[in-house]
Image (cartoon, rainbow, N blue to C red; front, side):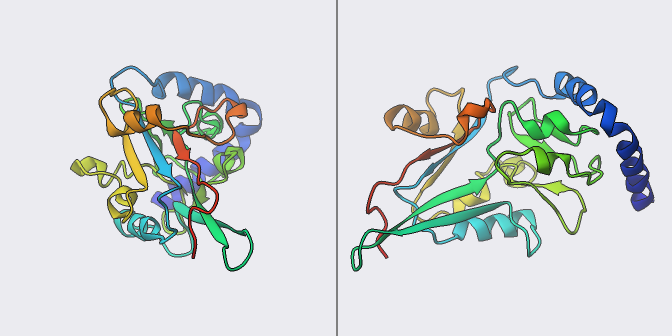
Length: 228
């Protein structure tokens, strides 16, 4: 029954999408993606000066969120080596959903499967509404979305919204990091550790010129930070 429903929705969207994707997504945005209506806006900071590229965050995410092999919600990219042997060094940077406040993936979704949770500001996916059209994958400038081979729906990091956060825990990646390179918190809480770190350190965000207003911050690694 579910496969038949998905097939019907996908066929219907294919017929309609060419002329009505943007009007549909605009209505969706107005109805479901209002951000700032409460006191919570979650974000994450990756301190590259502390990251050692151990991938504990990647494996914890996979286990907690039941991410199938062959795909991943996040990855740690190793950059380098830099410098001359034997004083070579590496940098590690996180690649995952940026949880944009103006999310292109949400704007193009014809069914409303991609949405911004108005209670938390988290960009999420309703797998039951996803028809696998892959518009969100094409629209994401950060190239972080994928089709889950088990659910056949679009998937990505959701800050463990359906798992750890529901249990009052931190995202799995944050809990697993042995060097405390990841900090998760509420941008609207001036007393939070996240806000304190953002105020105390120069940070960067990816592709700000696109106007997406991403909520994944990073403290950039310094030269020679990680020597292996």
